[in-house]
Image (cartoon, rainbow, N blue to C red; front, side):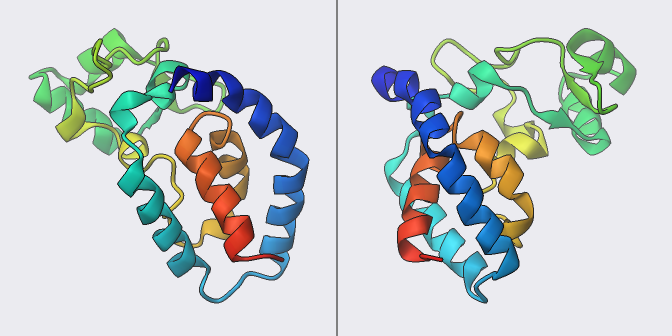
Length: 164
C-alpha cells in the first residue's frame, strides 16, 4: 500500500490533463446511465479496497464539518457544539468549518476512526464516486484521484467503460 500511495500523486498528475479533458467532454455529453455506471464501478472497487489499509484521506486532508455534523459529534462527546468547535475546528478561507490540523484528530494508529459511527457526512461519502449527478463533481474527483487509490482506479475504469 505504501508503494501505491508514494506513486499516487505522480500518477494522478500524469493523468490530470487526460482526466480533465475527459471530464470536460462528460459534462458536455453526459451519458444517461452515468450514475448507474458510477455506482457499479464504485461498488466493484470497494469490494476489493480496504480503506483501513490506506486512510490517506484522513492523513492528508480534512473534511468539511456541517452544522449537523457538529451537533451530532459534539453530542457524542457530551459537549456543547461551541466547545467542540473551539477544541477541534477552525474556519477556512471559504468560511467552512474544517479540522484545525491534519492528520485527522480522530484517526487511530491502526487507521480506524474514533468517531466512525458519527463521522462527518464528507467522510461517509468520500471519495464521492457514487454520488448522483457525478458530472457535477468532476473538479472534486480530479483532486480526489491524487489522494485516494480507489478514486484513481474508478476513474481509470470509467474511461474504459464510457469512452467519450
